[in-house]
Image (cartoon, rainbow, N blue to C red; front, side):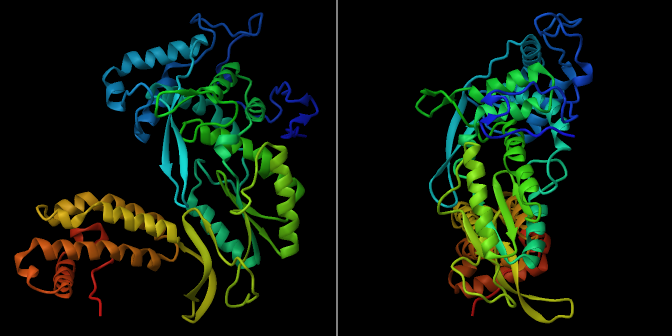
Amino acid sequence: MRNRVPMHREGADGPGVARNSGNAEGAKGSDDRAAAQRQPGGEERHASGKAFDIPKQLVVEAYRRVKANRGAAGVDGETLRQFEADRRNQLYKIWNRLSSGAYFPPPVRLVEIEKAGGGRRPLGIPTVADRVAQAVVKLVLEPGVESHFHVDSYGYRPGQSAHRAVAQARRRCWTYDWVIDLDIKGFFDNLPHDLVERAVARHTTLSWVRLYVARWLRAPVQRPDGTLAQRTKGTPQGGVISPLLANLFLHYALDRWLQREYPIVPFERYADDVILHCRSEAEAQRVLGAVRERLAACGLELHPTKTRIVYCKDGRRRRRYPHVSFDFLGYTFRARPAKDRQGKTFVGFLPAISRRSAQRIRQQIADWRLTSRTSQSLSELATLTDAAVRGWLHYYGRFYGSQCQAVLQSLNHALTRWAHRKYKGLRRRSHTAARAWLGRVARRDRTALALWQSGVLPYARL
């Protein structure tokens, strides 16, 4: 029988004391087999003379993944290109320090970005070398924890995706009338270090993995003015290891707890975005109260206004309720017209691109300032826009794709204004004539733009 990890602070071992984990979950990292004999004092000594047996090839693979993900420079200002120029020496230094127990992570560069709903979200950007070191630990720890995660945990996991989470939520909204839309306030900034470390210890016997996780959790943050801030809780949103630690924490703090206490309440979780499904408003109220108490015991707090109970109102569920829609992973779930397999129209509770996501797309199109690019050709504009358009269509076009295509008409409107200013023959004519001209170009050569290849063609406004 598996041992349960008490996520509240006063567990069986007393306040804040982690149990000797052993291998109770039967989950070893991929390098546990390579761990050598234990020496007196608890240190591992190997033929290499290093404290820890970390294969050099593991560091090389970690760098390959970091390079594929790209990313900005950290506090040292070193870019991936600069790191690559001295790659062999850089990777050796990382391996040497990790293997010797002498690796200490540098501060994390703090960057604040605009949030879709207003305000600013802090991101922590580690140095390139630190991202490689974190990737080494992730490669070892992830295989041992992945098989234990709940089937409805979708975020940052191999073989899972946001689309799968949205699809599952859509199916369950057809069956369950009520949804709890959870919003955990400042999740990444408030993770209790002791509980994260306790969860990690349940899944590895490698002391070096636990050692470096503890150091990363406590690495200081460097503000834009150069001052350092020490951290007593939280993990930087932007670190390589952070999503795995967040998933592991919520696996014990929420997923397994829900499975044990409320097995008839299904949910979808993508990192800290969580949707729960209930059959009645009374059940939703009870579950929400219990979840609020559970997360408080784990050092977290639900946002008082963003956490809501939602009624899945549609053509057959017609009750009045203050909240009849919710946003999840860039999609808004609400009543929408649709057609069944027989072609009959009905009103279903369905996801489509959210208003905030649409606003971000329109803002990006405006930021391209196409009307000021009259010296560029259509093929050059395709180089500028195609990658983003393909990404938008791939993600937001999966569910209720016509809504995404309607948003992307903004790009055709911008191209119409570009053509009207670029070509002398169109300047003396109306915008409607310019739009008609662009439509003829699109129909003659749909391959010119990714937008047109997808079927989003210019149309004339009446």
